[in-house]
Length: 357
Image (cartoon, rainbow, N blue to C red; front, side):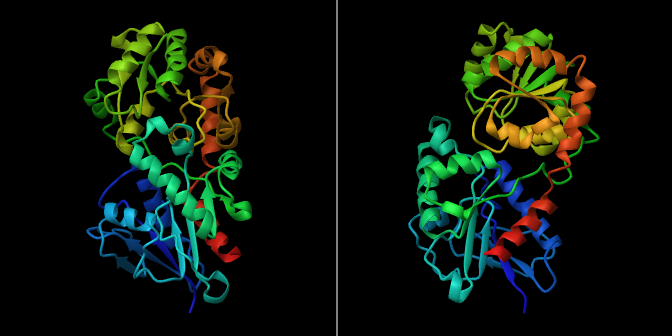
């Protein structure tokens, strides 16, 4: 009998982070599709969850809903889980003492960003405490901690004693991330202008993005703004010279809405140097949107030569170039770079990780 990889899918009924929830589903489907001969994939899910992934060998539904399960696992209480090979696309996993050598039990988790350590003020206090607590448990009990880039790996090594247990497996754009047929209608519903650049970042870093939009002569559309942040970001835009009428602040959008937004964007500008997988930059490159990003280790790892990576004080000039003379070049290079990332490839590397362990 071959190996059975048990995947934790914790956000099926209660989504805490939409990007990570989507990534977990895409990875699980990839694991099913790339399973070695004789191997199979099972799912571990909280109470109340419904799984719509074809090809799973089994689904283990636990007695607790996600919130209670998260609290239980943070305390190291994980009855009835069983052993075997367990992989989580987040930090949510039954991190308890197990015997990898004699029982062939393995538990691996994934850490997509280090905001709980480097930008704790951007997250709820409870989320920060939970993530920090789960990383401490991972340092004790995880057989590997997966991160999406070498820059994240280097920084994580400074935060936790994990040694060689840190492994790099990148993410990808959502499976089937394409421009929807009703893209124009979606943009109209979002009240977007005809010409704009898309920005992401924090309140402090977005100031540079707004200045870049002014220099490029476009409006700015901010994605993933925190709830309630609109007035503050409008003030930041105005201070940077971009009138409130030209600063379009939007929160979390669906994948189809994001694709529709990117479809008409003159460029995408990543203003933050945070140690995190750049979800939107990968999506922009996937759709051939010219990418400009502030200098960071993660951006060097992920965007590489698929976009313009510049110092903060060069962001405005680079954006003007990206929406003008260099638009075609960065569009082609970005789309080419995006092909380096796929959930099938990531799934194959997860299988390889468990085989190595």
